[in-house]
Length: 415
Image (cartoon, rainbow, N blue to C red; front, side, top):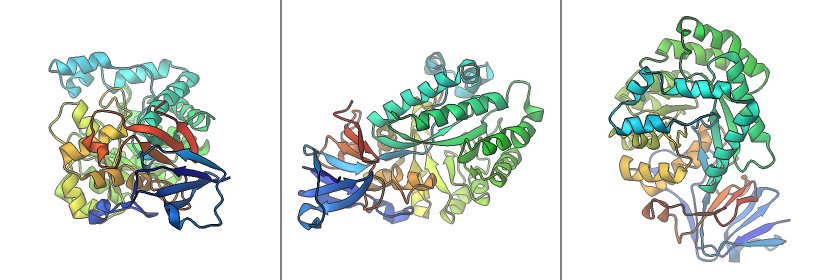
């Protein structure tokens, strides 16, 4: 029966089943005062002024928002939470002056997480994914993409993806999880000459056969996968029905953004070093520029993706956390939004659209989630705030009080 969410200070949401570009990213639909949300069978049945609610809607239950503000559930479209072990000692080394690349060259970085993840059982990895998902939900995330990439051999990559599937189908998962195969994350020790062939000939066919992933990703970067190697992996995945995504132009300009567009990729992610050619290509495409400001912040870099140039050119811009143990250890989309506005000069409205509707679009889910609209899945966050501007204005604290996924309250009173 219908659930009435009432006593709201404000409802603020982007609207649409597709993505928002340019000036449209700043256009939110807002309702102030006596507005309500009605949920039935996991979807939004009505959103708007209480006085205009159709009389045929008979509510069976109600939820007191206690003067909070409703925004869409956040969509985190780039995470690496299927891992074992943590790397706080490496973080401390960076604080003392070592670079991320220097640590990786000494055997740290991704390689250290690969070893811990290979040792972990599938059950342990699934529980780790759920633990991160619970923290994400506490900070307002209702949908998250999750990558493999800490296995770097067939057995371990499939184990990671099975763990993601187990977590996604767990009855008590508060977050909708979308799997991505990132076998092309790094080269295994001593395996550079044959690993691309292993991915193409062995790993991706097994992933597709077992339906373990929706997307296929590759880390095209200086010292990792070349443009040609990344293209080979992603084209092979696409032939098997896996939608391409791409780590692009993170540490250097590898022409990754343009490659993502050429491949029809769902997203080009990072983009701290994207070129003018890359920006122009993204602006003319449906490939999402998925920006990860928490990574720049955590690596203590002054270089952030050029969000203003991308938005002003007309690219579809999304935000994500890049949650991972080495370069962005955070589950908070609020943090990503705050950094986007305070360091990348996005407006609050743009950051909210990027963290909801556009991120959902990059996961091919914008017809189902990413906004508070009739017919969509009832994924929403109730903020302990009088309006959406507090998302950034009141920074450094968690304003999330209640979270609904598919109409079910998965976080109540911040717990």
